[in-house]
Amino acid sequence: MLVRDVMTTGVMSAKKDHSLRSVVTKMISRHCGSVPIVDDDNTLIGVVTLRDVLLPLYPNLGDYIHDNVHSRDFVEMEEGYPKVMEMKVGEVMTANPFTVSPDDPVLKAASYMGLKNLRHIPVTENGTLLGVITISDINQGLFFAQ
Image 1 (cartoon, rainbow, N blue to C red):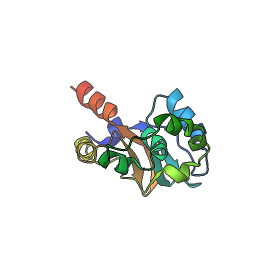
Image 2 (cartoon, rainbow, N blue to C red):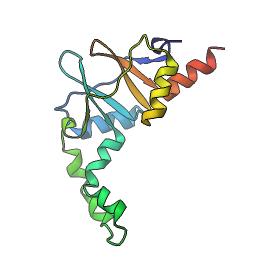
Image 3 (cartoon, rainbow, N blue to C red):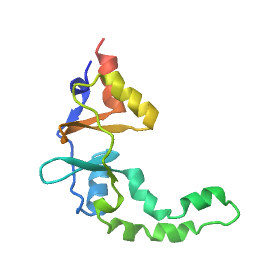
Image 4 (cartoon, one colour):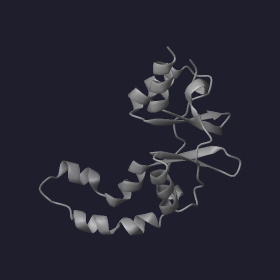
């Protein structure tokens, strides 16, 4: 079974100059955890996940993990969320994300997901976004292929 057999096509994408608010609103309303970021030619240039959107609230997260003596003001951090929503997608996206080809075996994509702790992988051909493959796509394809 190939990635093309189970991948999701017609996925929502965004541009790097879109606001985070617009992208997060779409992610939540469509129950998806990531959005591919493309240029004007539909070439994949990045990806934004819901996790990426929260990270700007924790600028010293590494310090916090290693320094449990000094507490953080989580209320103040939460009050900063509206400011984060004003940011542009390009400020938080993961540039040059890991991708798979539509001709890759499904289990190769699943293996990468496990190794890299991913839940979604953009599917590209010659850099052009064709769709996304998710853990759910893989499980449905393998389960219903019988």
